Image (cartoon, rainbow, N blue to C red; front, side, top):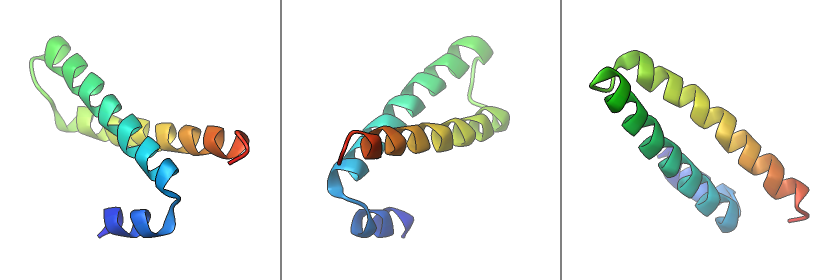
Length: 68
């Protein structure tokens, strides 16, 4: 539901940037956790949520600041 609402409310370019950025962050974070800890823990998932929030805010700030 949240994904559909975001697609309806946000400009498509920003939505696509958010999807790309969060997907790349997830891949990198998961790989780091599996290499370092041998698996993906609940603490790692919680940290990923916080990192994703920060990343999405930064992407939105850069997108808005770029004159879009």
